[in-house]
Image (cartoon, rainbow, N blue to C red; front, side, top):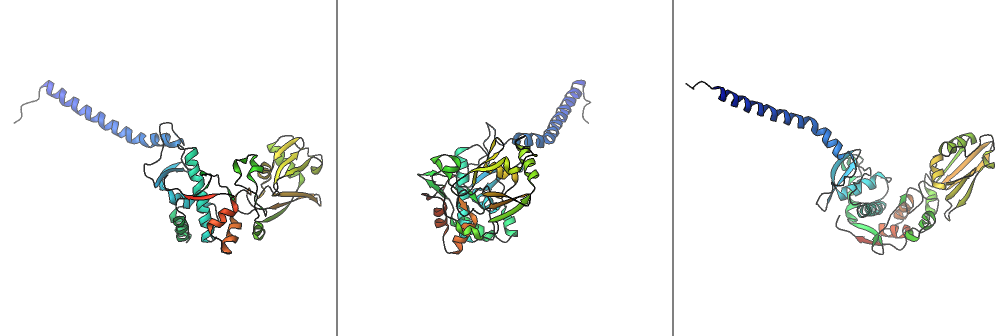
Length: 322
């Protein structure tokens, strides 16, 4: 038989029990707060003390829809490319897109090394469901590590769906010779594209309202639209550079955004008391035309030839490390 517990023994046992209860309560509290702590810690895209890059050469951290996850770099290249192109296009067009996307991602790594990638992308399982996974993986593997450079520096490689028949000059658009590789080149095959030409008839009052919403009091709804609004300059590819609305001068791309047009290569005329807006192309018109690339590919051009056409004076090199 055990001897009866003294007062000191009881107090010691009680102390031990209380410590255990406290530890359990702390553990429960941590479990309850963990989702909150994790969400708030990772909710900001970048932390000074946190760079979410793995040590692996092949994996990166991305943040899409508020969720941070690890993904193979080449899978991400493939997924981002797939998000921005017609998936019915041929293998050589897909290869060209892989190189363009990879170049832009590598450039972001150089310019903003602590910033997480956040471009939306198509997952491998989604590509499999769309029955294009094999083609996309083949394009990614065939161009693995390949990037576009000028004088050994990564370029900014823009792309668009369909040009207005010629791509735009980077020097004209940005006013800088930094983009000398973005020359205005012929892409006449784009005239065959489904989205090459759109024509709309719009009530002048609707145009006035849209412009005034962005630039208040620029236009007077009691004055004829064309008496106070006009295109004042275009670039060499035909895209509007400046549009005048009353005393306000609006950049062509901004005017495109305000009116919801396919591109800033637009023309306006009055027809039966309405404004007829004719638009050529789809997208900003800089760099690679995807439809033009596809026509070249169908004619037998390889991805390197396609890229050399749309980006002047470039060199394709293999970059093996992230």
